Amino acid sequence: MTPEAALAELRALADPERAAGAADYHKAKREYLGVRVPEIDRLAKAWRADLDVAGRVALADALWRTDIHEARIAAAKLLTQARIRDDDAVWHVLVSWLPDFDAWAIADHAMMAAQRRLTADPSRIDEVETWTRSPSLWTRRAALVVTLPWTKQNHPKPADLAIRDRVLGWAAGYADDPEWFIQKAVAWWLRDLSKHDAPRVRAWLAEHGAKLKPFARKEAAKYLR
Image (tube, rainbow, N blue to C red):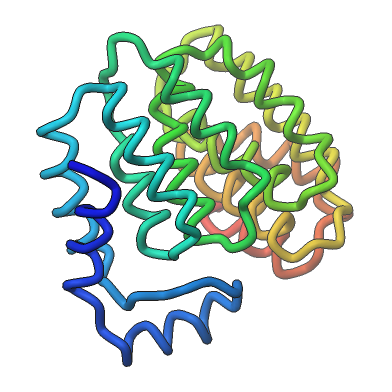
């Protein structure tokens, strides 16, 4: 599958009316095709089945470089896979996309792929921590999105608890960040964690909650009783 052929398949599904709506919604200035996410997912699965890891990485990066909204989502979906024997190239290309993040949908699809690679090799958390010091709000936000799997464990191992507490430390540093998307990401992380580890969320909110904006504080405590 060549990048040109993959892009042609995406363009064949284009919906101009949906594209106009997506452009208005996402705001980022790029081309939109109006292809639905389930259709993108179907194409990406078919391409992935015919490519080895190196081929997937190459196709994903080529699609990403087109700067077309749906092509970037397809790029992320190509690399969203639980088990990859040698995944260093996948991780590196996903990280290389961070400076391009400028809208939540594309960033989140890319970080969903990165979640699989981080859970496969948690030592990468040291690299993720460097993202928290980025001047880009999207890179700082990505550090919380990529670590969301650590909010969902009911019986975490000690190493997982250490990561959970580490990320809560990052969230504390973000608590008074004025950016709406950062506040929303902190609230999202805490809200999801509260379903599995309410005591940690209560303790965090008691110490840092006053620094959050009211909407984020309310969202973070949504499932606490």
